[in-house]
Every structure is written in structure tokens, then in C-alpha cells.
Amino acid sequence: MDYADPKKKSNLVGKILLAAALTALCILVLKHSSTFNTPSAFSRHEAGVTHVLVTGGAGYIGSHAALRLLRDSHRVTIVDNLSRGNLGAVKVLQELFPEPGRLQFIYSDLGDAKAVNKIFSENAFDAVMHFAAVAYVGESTLDPLKYYHNITSNTLVVLEAMAAHNVKTLIYSSTCATYGEPEKMPITEETPQLPINPYGKAKKMAEDIILDFHKNSDMAVMILRYFNVIGSDPDGRLGEAPRPELREHGRISGACFDAARGIIPGLKVRGTDYKTADGTCIRDYIDVTDLVDAHVKALEKAKAGQVGIYNVGTGKGRSVKEFVEACKKATGKNIKVDFLPRRPGDYAEVYSDPTKIWRELNWTAQYTNLQDSLQTAWRWQKSHFNGYGPPLPMAV
Ligand SMILES: NC(=O)c1ccc[n+]([C@@H]2O[C@H](COP(=O)([O-])OP(=O)(O)OC[C@H]3O[C@@H](n4cnc5c(N)ncnc54)[C@H](O)[C@@H]3O)[C@@H](O)[C@H]2O)c1
Ligand SMILES: *[C@@H]1O[C@H](CO)[C@@H](O)[C@H](O)[C@H]1NC(C)=O
Ligand SMILES: *[C@@H]1O[C@H](CO)[C@@H](O)[C@H](O)[C@H]1NC(C)=O
Ligand SMILES: *[C@@H]1O[C@H](CO)[C@@H](O)[C@H](O)[C@H]1NC(C)=O
Image (cartoon, rainbow, N blue to C red; front, side, top):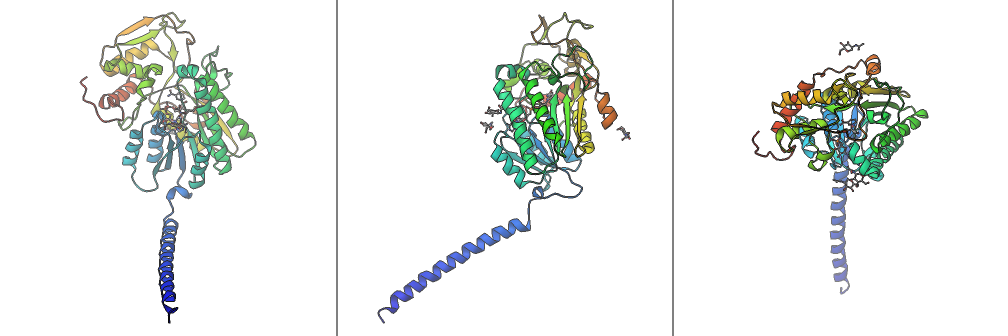
């Protein structure tokens, strides 16, 4: 019976091993079946619900678009690597729409094709609104590669993922900067595109890639060329909060608010001898609420195999002087204005002809009072002196 002992021992060891193996298997099966029983709403299509991938959804325009899509009962996935956007904007949206299957945020870089492919394989998107980009003309002349990378190359990555995963609707954020300095105003969609800076060129190249791909596919494509975007959510939930280090490249509305807050000593108006009524440059300012509405209409009217290209502007030019006056009234601050010589590369007059989008998408700008748009944005600025960060005590 000497040999019986080791046999018993090995039996015991075997039983323990078997029990452990069974437990492990149980856990695996449980885990597996739980993911099978409750598959994420994001991973399957649902009749009547449009699941929209909003790239750059933590940014200024993307966050406003996500809010509108969610309000319209769509399902939204935001992909953003927060290089420019704000997690705070995503948190606002998450608090407004906490129900499962409404909104998810994925932190990822669109330059990472592998990561983008994984996102597309794990989610059932019906459409893509591609906002993510770097978007400052001045910066683009200093760092052109960053622009060709984050605009042109990343759009190619998104398009390839859409093709590989059969996502058939694309709404693309383009810009009036793709037109360059046209001789004739207003700018129609037929105005030749001759961009004069890397930002405009990178966007034009991205448009070309999309249009070439579209020729041999049944994709529904809408390209929206925005003019100068201003304003923010009328209910004050979202605003525009660019990184402080981008202020120097910033846009006129940001500069105006910074001057009103006393962060900068005043506004510098460059050029008072242009051939315009008051000598300052003329631009077309479009309120972000109207812009987002154009995206929703574009999404509704997008048709397989067709492409729509639209200017999104008010059709009305406003001079820099007019803008500054509206800003003074909106903020109630007497902003100091210095009039300086022209800045090279600025063109006198840019405004859109928005007839096509009105005719084809029944869209027209509603928020066309400059002072009202700026007042809405200023209200948010005033209550968010630290952007989406923790509130800062500051008297104004
Ligand atoms: N603001 C305007 O006046 C204006 C005018 C014309 C066109 N546009 C276009 O509208 C779009 C949105 O502009 P915006 O003003 O909201 O800019 P924004 O900087 O506020 O938002 C862009 C977002 O994209 C994200 N992003 C950038 N690169 C990324 C990457 N590689 N991977 C993942 N996320 C990335 C940023 O983090 C940011 O949240 C851009 O495509 C821009 O070119 C803007
Ligand atoms: C965005 O992604 C790029 C490329 O992966 C990375 O180099 C960069 O650090 C990221 N930026 C942020 C703020 O995460
Ligand atoms: C743009 O691309 C560069 C790589 O060229 C990357 O490091 C960066 O995070 C991207 N995003 C921004 C906003 O620069
Ligand atoms: C166009 O829009 C207006 C205003 O939103 C609306 O009243 C009208 O019914 C729309 N027309 C069509 C043909 O959709």
C-alpha cells in the first residue's frame, strides 16, 4: 500500500486543478455571456436612430453639433484627442444625456489608423460628421506639416475606415479659405478654389480626396464650406474656449472678448484703407447655431451616390468696424481700438452667396444680428472666465 499515498496525493492535486480550471471557465463564460446579453447600443444599428460619429466633438463647433444631434434623438459617438478641444464640453453633454446608448466619448487620435479602424469595427455608425482639424490660418503658415497631417492625412484615414466598414454618409467641415482671394464677390460654390495658405490648401486637398473617392462609390457626401463662425449655445450650456496658447492666432470674436475681459489691452484693427465703405475688411459671420442647423439639414438630405457642396454663410458682409461696435455693445465694455497698417495677406472683402443651400436644403441663417450673437457668446464667457476649467474668481 506504499504506492497508494502518492496516488491519493496526485488525485487531490488533480481535483484542485480541475476545480480551478472549471472556475476559470465559469468566469470566462459569464463574462462572455454578459457581453452577449447586453451588447452596447453603440455596436448595433437601430431603426429610426442615426448613430453619428462626431470627430472633433470636444471642440467648439463639434460640441455644438453633438448637442443638437442628441436633442434630435440621435446617437452620438465623439472621437477627440483633446489636443484642442475640452473634456469639459463632453462632460456637459454627458450630464445632459446620461441615458445609456445616447453619447459615448472615445479618446483617440485620428492620425492613428489602427485605433480608428478599431473604433469603426466596434461601433455601428450610420454617418460621420468630420470636424476634427487644426484651424488657424496664421499657425498653418508657421507649421504647415501639422496642417497637412491633421487635416488632409487624417481625413484620408477617416475615409478609408468608412470605406472598410461600409459607413455611407459623410458631412465634411470645409472652409471659405479654400477659395483664396476671389476677384468677384459674393463667393458662390462655382467660384474657383485657389487657396493661398496651408490651412486652405489642406482643406481643399481633403475635399479633392473625398470627391475622387466618391466618384466610384455610393457614398452620400455633403461638403460644407463655412465662413467666419461666431456665437454659442443660446441656452448657455456650451461656449468657445480655445487653449490660451492659441490666443495669438485667434479669431476676432475671441480677441474682442479678451479685450473686454482686460486680458489684452485692446483690439488691433489692421488696415483702414481698404476699398470698402468704412475702409476696414469685410467678412461674413455665421452663428454656430445656424451652422449646426445646416449640418442637420445636410444629414437629412444626404443621398447615396450623390454629393452636395454648399457655402454656409449669411450672404451679408460686415466690416471690422461694425464688428467692433457690436462687440462693445454686446459686452458693455469700452474696448480700446488701435488702427494699424494693413497686415499682408488679408483680403478686403469676403462674403458668401448662400442661395444654393437655401434652394436645395431649405436652410437660411436665422441668427443674423451680430450684436445678439456676440451677446450670447459673451454671457457664456462671463460665466466661464476659466473656460471649461474650474471657475476662477474674477471681477468684471
Ligand atoms: N471656427 C471657424 O470659424 C471655422 C471656419 C471654417 C471651418 N472650420 C472648420 O470647422 C471644424 C471645427 O473647428 P472648430 O472651430 O470647432 O475647432 P476646434 O479646435 O475647437 O475643434 C477641433 C477639435 O478637433 C480635435 N482634433 C484635432 N486634431 C485631432 C486629431 N488628430 N485626433 C482627434 N481629434 C483631433 C481637437 O481636439 C478639437 O476638439 C474644423 O474642421 C475647422 O477647419 C471652422
Ligand atoms: C494626440 O495624438 C497624437 C498622436 O497620437 C499625440 O502625439 C498627441 O500627444 C495627442 N495629443 C494629446 C493632447 O493627447
Ligand atoms: C497633429 O499632428 C501632430 C503630428 O504631426 C500630432 O502630434 C498632434 O497631436 C496633432 N494634433 C494637433 C492639434 O496638433
Ligand atoms: C423650409 O423651412 C421653413 C422654415 O423652417 C419651413 O416652414 C418650410 O416648411 C420648409 N419647406 C420645405 C419644403 O421643407
